Amino acid sequence: MIEFNDVKQKELLLHYANEFNDSECINIIESGVNSASEVEQLAKLYWAIVDASVSEDIEYLLEKTYTTLHIHCGNRGFSEVWDNCIP
Image (cartoon, rainbow, N blue to C red; front, side):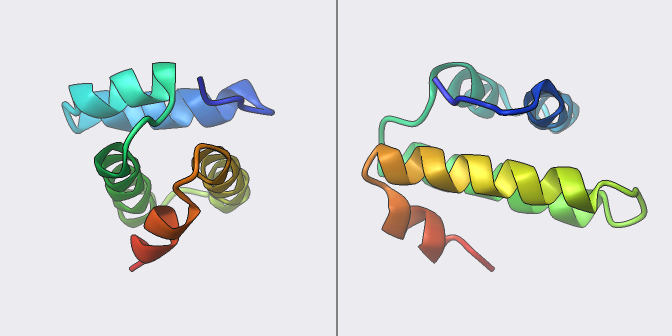
């Protein structure tokens, strides 16, 4: 399970995963990553959120969410996969 320091991070991810109809990411957000492909899917969601939220004032929340996801993926042994997904 991904350990969020702020419930707003999880809410943000779930909001956009639902908006994008991304049921795979919803499952990943709830249970955590277990494979490189899940890391890639989660990273795609994160960067899609960054692109979609340009007009919103949520930079601080995005930075906190990035850090949480990066730490989670690293703790699961997928730090390099996450880093390779940075556009």
